[in-house]
Amino acid sequence: MPNNTAEIRSVSVDDTMVTVTWGDDQQSRFHGLWLRDNCACEACGPHDRGSRLQRLLDIPDDIAPVTASVDGAALRIVWPGADTHVSDFDPAWLRAHAYSPRSVLESHNPVRTMWDGSLSEWPAVEWDRVLSDDAERHRLHASVSEVGFVLVRGLGTGHDGIEKLAEEVGYLRETHYGKFFDLITRPNPVILADLAGTLLPHTDEAYRRVPTGINMFHCLKASTNGGVSQLVDAFSVATQLKEQHPDAFELLTRVPVRHERRTEDQIITSDLPAIVLDHDGEIIEVRLNERTMTAICVDEELMAPTYAALRTAFRIAYDPANMIEYLMQPGDALLFDNLRVLHARTGYTGERHIRQCQVMRDEFFARGVSLGEKVNAPRSVLS
Ligand SMILES: [Fe+2]
Ligand SMILES: [Zn+2]
Image (cartoon, rainbow, N blue to C red; front, side, top):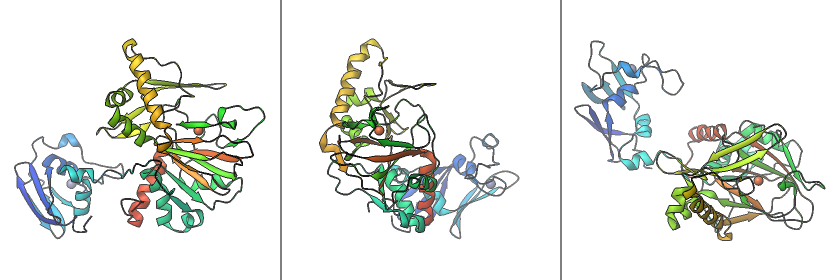
């Protein structure tokens, strides 16, 4: 973005609307009510600390500025009423929150770069540098936000390595697996991941309503004879489904697909659609795991199309053209967003030790956003 985007060239008022012309010649229109509601003067209080004093219902429905002018760099608005309330808006704040035109609104969205099997290199950061350099630390969080995963290299092979990593990037999430879980070949396997057979691309813990977190795998002992880690971009899978089979896509955003997991003292179930969209129709969560799916419960006339749509989605998800792979080395950690990326593993016959945990998702991404502001990071980690 050119650096004059947050410069206000001129401003005009038309009834209740304020039009700002920016340094890059874009024009944004703002409603009087929106501006008055977003006043952050001392009396109205800040709007990013949970301590706003301004009450929405105290503002007249039809509020319109008396004047709008550029004062220094700020946009100054004088409001009607005996108290002659004045609002000063920082142009950078105003541009960052502008909602017109549509291109400006869209520029606020986080960058998501979709990929397939042709992605040549896994985004990676060095553990030493993460600890000493905020730009590297930001790249760790931003890579997971943008492409869904990142490799951390040089974590060593200490048993507590993953705990140190978790502490640096978020808050540990404890589940029925405990805080940490060792994926090692065992003589009497408890869950399927303990077996050394092939694991197809899947979402972990799809049976939970509260989204599972950022998954972290730390390699203490590399696999011998197989055991290659594989990833699939689930947003790309959903997008391919949307383009090639729009009816199937639409159905999977709407029908519940039940997943279930029984433990000693819990029966955990979820009835969420396989694909979750946001207010704008953008894909924000994907849940695909045929191992944890249980009896699907939808209207009779939707059963056949639901199965057909799921089978189509799994075909795309399992297509090798969508998959990337990497044999984790001792000291590597893989972090991925479980609702963005499907993970898989080839079968193996030798030894392997992966230590696993999760950190909570919101906090992980929130730290990334804060670091991005601190280091003034580029929009894309790939650029
Ligand atoms: Fe898994
Ligand atoms: Zn105010």
